[in-house]
Length: 186
Image (cartoon, rainbow, N blue to C red; front, top):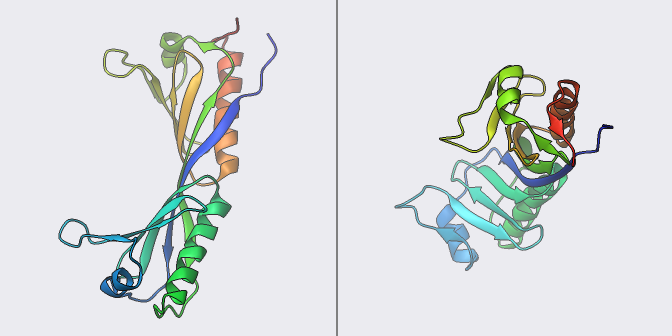
């Protein structure tokens, strides 16, 4: 059967950022009514944006973690937007943020069913224990990702640092499954 193209959707991009200076979280809380800051429970402040729909944790060290973006570019834009809003709110931020993508989570479908028990036997660094979890856990070395693969052909890919690595990981897995005759097309 000819290979079908896997459908992949980026669900979440996690980026860390730093402005290389300390910030006063209490001052941010006074300037922005809609931020969440409970220092007795967690040392970071949560700054949410509606567009792009993200949440950025800000720590007094000037370090940040942005989650919820749907692309690497969107994550970087969200961090820049947070810094701009802080500046408009009279928070003294002297440096431009340095943003690094830490993790990309994507979901996808291979377009056919998968023989998971046989795949677990034939794919190196794979684990399948259906009594504990219904999917096969496949640790790919290059690109360094973890793919949760289900019998339906649906999957979740995590650990990638670039969108290209997500597509490469899913494509590599798809090609390998097809070469080993582990895909079932209706």
